Length: 75
Image (cartoon, rainbow, N blue to C red):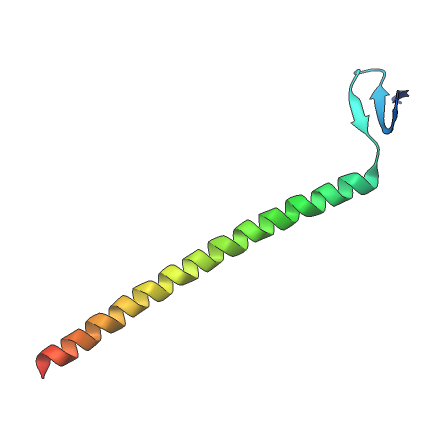
């Protein structure tokens, strides 16, 4: 089992004696960090989806414009 030593002047950090690693033991801070990571990931995906939808609408508008031009040219 790992043994931990408290880091001086910081209650949220401990040092793993076997690996000498510093570990943050503040679960609330970690959970908040992960929420922000997931929110940024979702925001990026929403932006990508919006850009795709805009591009589809632009292509459809070009098709409609071309059909209207074809109709007016025939008359």
